Image 1 (tube, rainbow, N blue to C red):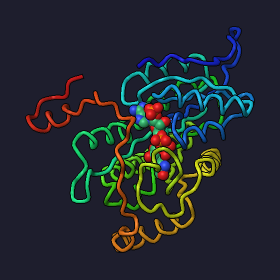
Image 2 (cartoon, rainbow, N blue to C red):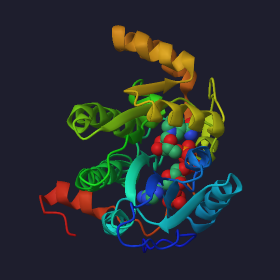
Image 3 (cartoon, rainbow, N blue to C red):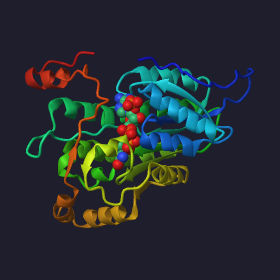
Image 4 (cartoon, rainbow, N blue to C red):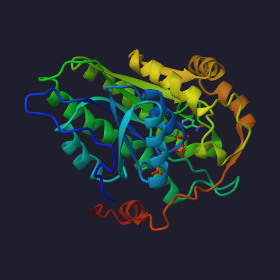
Length: 302
Ligand SMILES: NC(=O)c1ccc[n+]([C@@H]2O[C@H](COP(=O)([O-])OP(=O)(O)OC[C@H]3O[C@@H](n4cnc5c(N)ncnc54)[C@H](OP(=O)(O)O)[C@@H]3O)[C@@H](O)[C@H]2O)c1
């Protein structure tokens, strides 16, 4: 899957011009990502919309343009090196002003007594954790190189989940990937401060989107993707450390951190759900690498 920009690239610059600012949104073809793109759309800012599904990216692009913004779309799988190659190219033409690392997958066990399959486990870890960490690393490295020529407030948002703070049984692996992302974000933040880069860890509760449509169970305090995007952009642009929303989940997560375990054990039965398999999962996904390397100690192939 190539990473070449496919739409509405801005006009070429003359030598010596300051490159225009760019904010990257991964998972822009999905519910929250599309709403984030629309929320960020503004004159003078180019958005880079990343995802794999071309129709979803096209919808996001149209949403940005309807609001008077400008965007480029690139079909990239964030679990591959394509993102890095794309970023090398884009950093030559733009100042990287922000990253919303929002791409993610959900999956649950096939039935109530099962555990998540090996395939789903690997996909979730590779996408939610390794893919997002790789995106952050790639963007931070390029932001640091650009700091010499351009000084501005730069932001990174890591879209985790309330499930990373209060793990739920039907989303055990998903919860683990989000907890890992939360830990990574909090650990990294101080190291970015000297570069003038803020990092916001985002923990939404239930948000209406194609992902949450597959969550068959109660979804207390569910909010729209537009409302979530408003909160995410506001917290990120203000350089906040973290944002947990909506309010009832913020309060629950505070109580949970004061008395770990007790609260979760009492309330999780209310969150029981069946997670319908994701129809967008490509059947060709290769899961054998992790299993094989675990089974016989063989090194991973490329
Ligand atoms: N909805 C909720 O209730 C909720 C709650 C808490 C946190 N979140 C988090 O919010 C984020 C957005 O979720 P959503 O609700 O908007 O779900 P969604 O509609 O399913 O969107 C997920 C997005 O991630 C992209 N994506 C997945 N794997 C990718 C890959 N390998 N490379 C590039 N893009 C990839 C998808 O793009 P393609 O399919 O085009 O590749 C899609 O744009 C996720 O990280 C999710 O975990 C959601």
